[in-house]
Image (tube, rainbow, N blue to C red; front, side):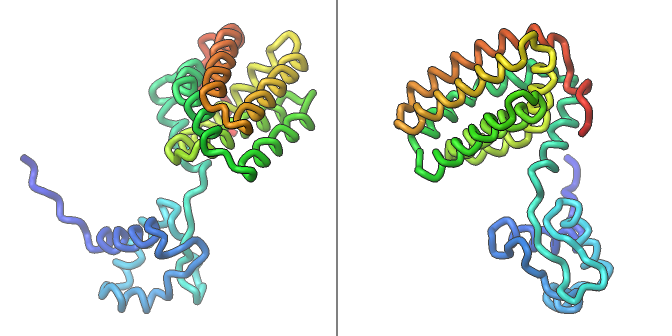
Length: 245
């Protein structure tokens, strides 16, 4: 058995501050106080404190502004940072776009059911706002793909399950590009945009009425049908073959 590694003092300080940020005690935009105050509070040297802050900065939990009297500022990692990490892992494993879509098929019907069961007027308004964005983007397959994928993100957010929401956000970059690329190869792009908007509108109607089981069945049927079509448009395409931006 390997001897247990003793954490460096900087790691201990970083862990303490990280815990306060993740617990909500320290909120985004708040200052961690000056270096002098933090050094006194944690009884550490300046180099140790700065190493701790670099660890937090690498995790996108603080922003260090050199010369600022406010000290490091608390921040939260953006979803695109998580998305890029997931994309890198998928590329390393040579995952295909089919892998991504099949995974989404496992949880999105459940997200639709929970969104109906947990529906609120504000949530329904948010979904209908995305429908308006899709309608405005008809004819532009890139803009429409981005709006259509936001529909999936909002849907999982409204499920009330944080894990679903984070997973969906992390796949948004990949799936939006996938949708745009697939749509560009469709023989009748406008037709598929019209169909997609119609299907999304139907799902929102079911969610608004609270028909959770019906929403899950409808979404399963839709995802299955789309999967068959997309296999023809993107067969063998790997995540690595998508552009990075």
